[in-house]
Image 1 (cartoon, rainbow, N blue to C red):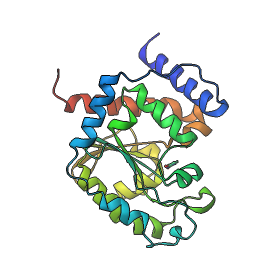
Image 2 (cartoon, rainbow, N blue to C red):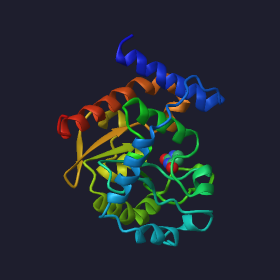
Image 3 (cartoon, rainbow, N blue to C red):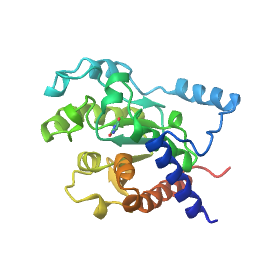
Length: 233
Ligand code: URA
């Protein structure tokens, strides 16, 4: 079985698991040493001002604050090489105050694992930090009101790669109204930082046959770009 077939199988397992709760594969337990390394990585972070999370949590710049349970600043390594940007918190994220913890989040975790990344080593955030009621798409003025937070987060983290998950992230970062189909598969730039655009995991969950091959190709592009940037060991 080649790598692509293996990935397709893994992704299908992940989709089945997220949809049905049936786990085809047991997740690996991180080695103790690895966990320690991850903690050290997080502590090494110097540039991220945690005050921004507090400002996001108390933000009232747009109507989305009215119905939120929790604002969701982001999670992961604040010194990460790779930042993933989704659309906005859903129900579970609003309850827990953490991004991508619902079904789409479970799939994102597995997509990362497929290219040997852990959630703890990347940073995960959203275009809007408060849940749009009923999970509607964020409105342009809401995206605009939240953009300074996203921009500051990116500046403080200083990633080497940004990955946009879905149309709102692509529109916000690339300032383009072109569809994902046109923008994926290439490397764009945001303030000089390379940007990869792909479909949102929720779209993959809804229409796996339509999107999983393209998402795999985008993940491969990310893996290659990241490998090229790291010194060979
Ligand atoms: N979808 C998103 O775009 N972001 C989340 O945090 C969860 C689901």
